[in-house]
Structure formats: structure tokens, C-alpha cells
Amino acid sequence: MKAKYPFDPVLKRHFIIAMGLFLWVFLFLFFSEPLDVGELRFKEKLIFLPTYSFVASLGYLVLLPLQSWLYAYHSQSWKLSSELLMLLAFSLLGLVLVRMVYLFVVVPFEPNPYTLSYFITAIYIPALLVVLPIVAVWRYGLGRYLEKREEEQKVTIAGSGNYEGFRLVWNQLIMVTSADNYVEVIYTEDNGIKKYLIRNTLSAVASDLPQLLRVHRSFLINPDQYKYVNSENGKFKITMIHDLQCPVSKTYLPEVKAALNFTTN
Image (cartoon, rainbow, N blue to C red; front, top):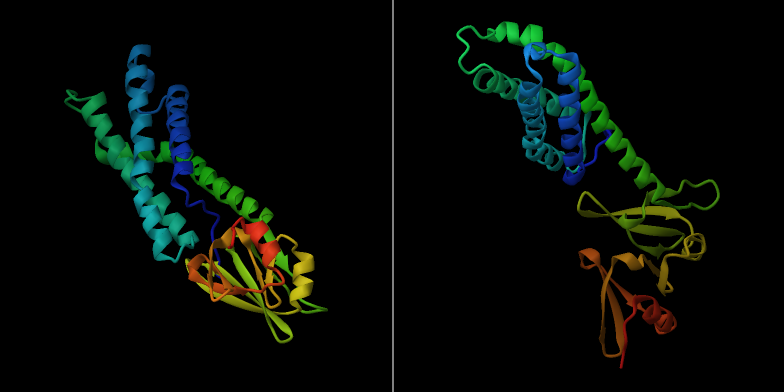
């Protein structure tokens, strides 16, 4: 199994981090007074500090396409190296943006602004050491929360006796079929179809997971992954996601019709 770093790929939740970053940077600058904030009048603080906060959150948002690309490049897996790269990119981009605000907004006509080296070592890095851990903790917490939710949504397809079972998220599961003394679990992972053999009977699986729908003596399906039913010469077939098909026997047809809400002539 691939080692993964806790991560939430949903962009709209990262917008919440950006909003929190805006507020955190504003409060940090207002009360800690780096960047010569202490020399600013109250009205100037209300003008300049939101600008710094805005570019900090903007820098985070600008990097979200890079985040999405890294996630797709690693087959929808997030690694520690990807997280470190994102934090490094955020730090470097933040330096550029904050320096521009300092030069062109805060001291546009100042003949002797801070040199870049002094700005980095005496101002930006100390501020970054306060802001960056907060961003890292927020991102980690968001990923852990998602992992916890996914774990709560998982189901276990048990193996008989001492044989190991298989645990997966319910929405990954498409169907379970019988295969001699085994059952074959067909599921989705990384936008593809995968199969997993477990030593057990289909009846035992049906008993353990009543939310699965029996459509044939050899097939159980996840009704949430159902697309449509078609018939030919009086024989019915169910099409699931990824266009996987399975037969429907006459024995189970009434129950299947009621569960999937379709009618036949």
C-alpha cells in the first residue's frame, strides 16, 4: 500500500483555509507589529494590514492548480514530498508578493527601503515561522478529518474462518460475484476497476452486508452504483458504473424492480 500524507483534494475547502489565513495574518500583524507596523497609525494599519493578509491568502489560492496537478500526477495520491513542495512554493511566492506590497504600497516613495537580504532575514522569515506552521497544521487537520470520514464510511467484506477480509469505502464497491470457493469484489480505485478475491460465500457476504442487493444467485450489487436496466428477449441486465454488467434472474426480479425503481411490461 502506498504511503500517503493526510490530504483533502476538494478545492472549496481550501478556500476556507485561504479565508482563515487572511484573518490569521491580519491579527498576527496587528498585534505582533512586524514590518514596521508599530510605526503605522491606526488608519494606516486598517489600509496596509488587510493588503498583506490579502496577498497571503491570494498566494495560497494561486497555488491550488499546482496542488491539483500534483494530486493527479501521483494517481490521486498525496505524498509528504508533495506537501513539502506546496509549503515551499507558498513560502517563495509569499516572499515575492509581500515584498511587492512593502515596496509599492507601504513605502512607495521611501528613498531607503529595507534591502532584500534584511527584509528576508529580519522580517519575512520570522513572520513565516509563525504563519507557515499554522497553514501546515490546517492542511494536515483537513486531511485527517477527511480520512476519518472515509474510515467511517468503509465496509468490511469478511473472509471465512481465519482468512483475511477486505475493507473499502462503500462508494468504491460496485459488485460482488461468486467464484467457486471465493467471492470476487469488484471496486473502483484511482478511476479504474480493480478486483479482489476473498475466501467466502456470496450468501455470507449478503448476510453481513444487507445493503447489497441480490440480483442473481452469483451477483450482489451496490445499488448506489446502478445506472440502468435493459432487457432483451425477456432477459434483464443491469448496467453499473464503468459500464459493468450483470444478469438479473427472474427469482430476484421483483425485489430488484422495487429497490431500483424501474418498471417492465
